Image (cartoon, rainbow, N blue to C red; front, side, top):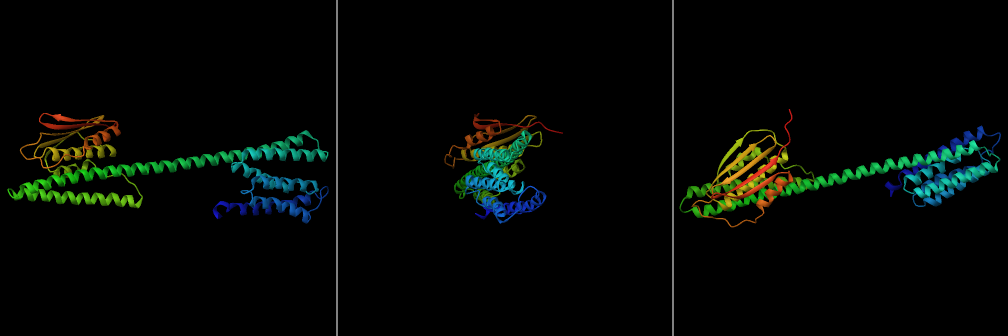
Length: 368
């Protein structure tokens, strides 16, 4: 309540002070042809400031009462000028607070009352009537301009807030997708390596030890990724995920399959392209470890002028038994969605005895 009505008391106080000060000066300057101020005059001058205090609750009534007090002030013969301030302020407030039709009706009533008073006093000068009309029109046009500026500013702020919320939601959605990919990759890797360790623990303890070491590394990473993302979400400060091609060597090393990494060319990449390429390679290696254990995998990155080509191909399962169950089937659609989101394409399917994934991600022109 204090916030809503906080400005009105100060405005009322300013208007009251201005009217009393101007009334004193105007009364002295017009003492030869207007009545001196008395308690009745000061009471009429107080009507406007009091109306400002109640204007939000009773906009029409307070404006009408203030206009009536102004007319009574003039009819009583007091000085011209001070009683005009309150009606002008209330008409201005009507417009800026959204009561436009009411404001223009009351402005018309004000114009009629002023012109009627002038004619009753014998002042039928056309120039005087035009001056009154001009003053009221200028006041109303100024109020309309202020209203338009305020509405546009409020609309810009509302749009900016909605855009900020949308971006925050998109960033959180992206982070959730990143977390899903990290979990899917590492848990699949842990599952495959655990199955391998169980299979080889009696016949080949050293290979089982290597598989268990891979499980330890993968579980440590997934815990770190989860902690990092959850901390960011808890703090309410979304930020872009950081996985990029600079971490590709680490990904290959702990993938659980034999990988040959090839890079053709080099150039700076947008962060979103780096993340997409990294996740596509990650998901492809997860699929190779799950469905073609023991195969040789080739990862090839070709940095072209207009696109980045990512190829991941495996030679197919060898004599190592298939130790993992079928996955959820969301890996390839997820990779294809990442590529499509950047305007690229992804093709995945059998290639010889193995399987191949090829993604083409468009790149912006290099600037020098």
